Length: 234
Image 1 (cartoon, rainbow, N blue to C red):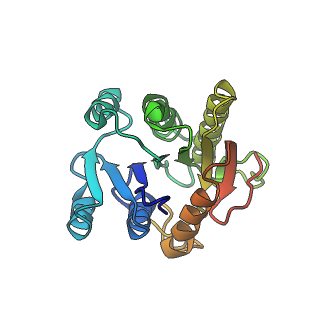
Image 2 (image 1 turned 60 degrees about the horizontal axis):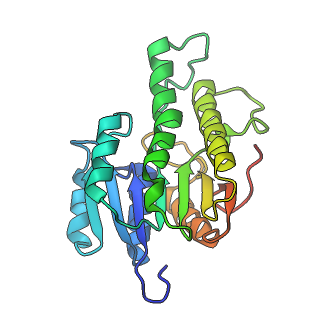
């Protein structure tokens, strides 16, 4: 995880629980310096983890749906070099709720959290990522238009498809950029959001997902991949 004895610095946006928290743990185990964020009053687990890794883990607060929070975090980090910027953000509406059912307010909440806010973070923080660095977002296989054969979870699917499109636009605007750009699909994982019936445990998903991220480090362009490194169809 380190190169020429230089410690890798990872900024994980949205790491207070679930997949993001597991990513923080995994990178700490690999010797990285981790800056992990959560919303105010949600960082208790991260602060406990910091007691185990006091030299490697920094805990910051930010709500990515609040632009002022994002700006303030960027200001606090100053000119820090970030080798991996990874945004893990995800909410969903009620599972059985269709486009016909969902309220406008709930639709906006899901879209702002899952699609708009992650790209705003990337636009704000990409100046801290060097040409050798990587920028990634937690997407989902459910963001694939090709793979949508049953129509379930359609608001969530739509938000992740929008996220993918926004990231593709970012990549197109930075076509000469040598950095690695990643949309990662972790699989259906047993988290608070995924539920206990999910197919994968966190330990089956996240170590492999981190391994895939590191395998693609230094490979320019945008890649839409699952946790096992398989290409996900757009």
